[in-house]
Image (cartoon, rainbow, N blue to C red; front, side, top):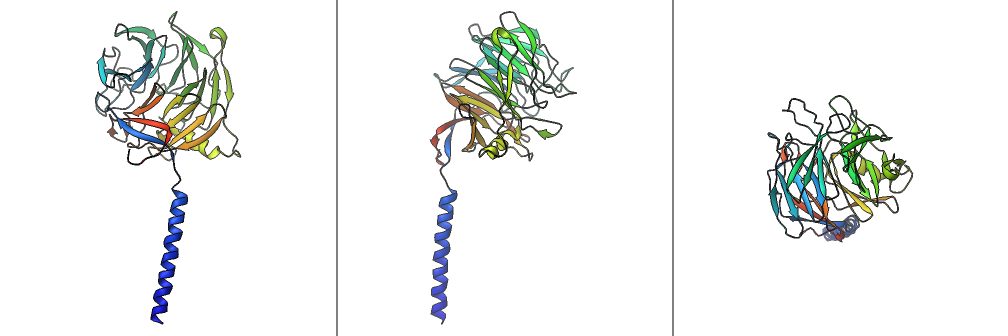
Amino acid sequence: MKQIKIATALIALVGFVMFTACSSSDDDETNQGNWTKVTPFKGVKRSGAFSFTIGTKVFVGTGYDGDDYWNDVYGFDINNGYWESIAEFPGTPRERAVAFSVGGKGYVGLGYNRDADKEELRDFWVYDPTTNTWDSLGLFGGSARYSAVAFSIGNYGYVGTGYDGDNTNSDFWQYDPSSNTWKEIVSYPGDKLESALAFVIDGKAYIGAGWDNGLHNLDFWEFVPGTDGGNPTWTKRSPDDDESDYDEFKLAMYRHDAVAVTVDTKAYIIGGVSSTGATDKTVYVFDATTFDWDDRTSFEGSARSLAVGYVLSDRIFVGTGQNGTSRYDDIWEFKPNEEYDETY
């Protein structure tokens, strides 16, 4: 009788192991996307830095390390593989500024510095890489603010939303570098936003995520610039809640202070702070040709918000940022078309 009990127990154990193995195999589906750690950022650990790209080079600067605001700036050329110091940003040191590039020059403005006479900043500056110099452009057309969105399409830069110290905004402004002028254009039609994300694919911008009044935003809008600098057209691109990828869309949008980068017709949304208040590592992809949403391998560095993300020669990079009181200077490359490999 004792032998029968042992045999029965062994059969049960084998069955349990086989079931567990099958379940593990089902759950361990191959994730698409692989992360590798690359050359770290040259400056001190920081969050809320700006970044813009010109050709094969990215420029990253300013930010906050938890004690001090910085105005140092560094450039990284994908062809050289190292960071080098460039001319310091001449304005007030800051975090949460906006940046974009047009016509081979970089534009930086707005932001926040709690130690300044006016915490919310309104000034704008231009950087010329051919002379390694910064010049003042005067004041932004709208109110002083931080955590706004910015992007460029064609010959114009665009800046909108953000928090001005009293109000969250939905206004949008177009900048013409040829005349150094700002023009207010049709406002963002969704809920007011701060700490949102924006990216450009095929001459169209997409704006989403972010929050206001303590609530995260589920709107997702497409921005098509007007002809000859005219008013843009806004089209809502949020999927219906009965569509198969709605859950992925919702998880992608329910965050603030995230990173968004684009390669070809796809955008990758990375990190930030989720609707639960936790700093996030998840990655979601949006395909502008099909308007589909899907997930990808999560970021393999420490979870973070207020990071920088950029693309050089179709290669995606994410780095710096913060999680609570921790700041970072590491840089990671994301390869979205590779299968996940935990050894790299």
